[in-house]
Length: 135
Image (cartoon, rainbow, N blue to C red):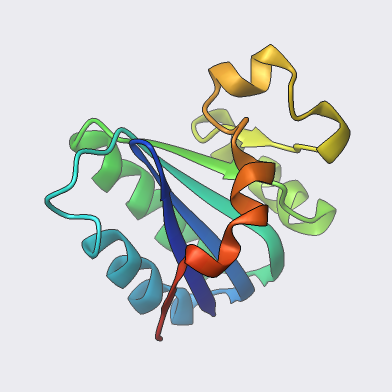
């Protein structure tokens, strides 16, 4: 699992690549730890490059959700592949973690901005400013 991390105002953005499984724990935790000391209200995890997810990944995502919630930080998953999104719905994670499919042609839709992910395309253009989190 590769993780690139960046900021957009008070949102920590993680762009994930590869399998979301037990190997995701360390790089995701490092990316979030790098944000300690900075005010943040939301974590957005871009799953567009996540190829698959297993039960360990589901457990990690659920633990992450609860950990962030205790700190008053919201978690949102954007752009998962259909198979990953289907799994998140199957195990009912989609009932507690917002899952949003954002398409480039709808980036200015107010509803997406209200949910905190309207910045996504801006972030894609500025990816070189993101830090790579080593596993």
